[in-house]
Length: 149
Image 1 (cartoon, rainbow, N blue to C red):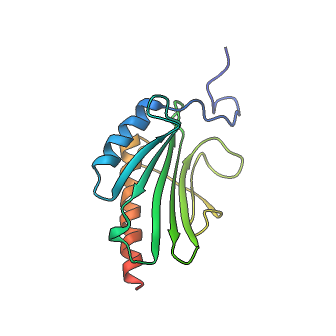
Image 2: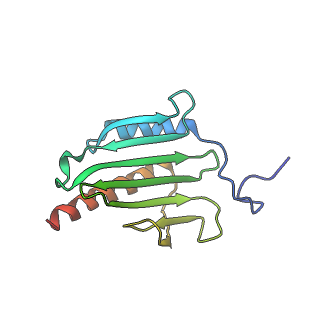
């Protein structure tokens, strides 16, 4: 029997945690920031949870915004926030927890391009705590966008 991911130097995140994805979907669907949720490939065997953010609360320069959430049975995750702007530019960032050679297991891909990476600490990596942190960051982003108008 092989060791669990992360204990052997393995860079695998493991299979999708469908129960956690469904939990997060219920919270996203109830959140006023989110217009729509969808699973990929479907709700029976989801690998990805997508939350389409309601851009009616954003300045007009934002054409769309979404969250792409992956959660794995190992407790690893990736939450990618992406804004598409009317001028064709993109603003994005990502919160990750997975084995990797570039940073600590928990790290943040900084905006605007998500290419610069910084170590990150969460007080808890419980899915609802991470969800709360991310949604708070999105709310701050929206405030920043309005303040820059």
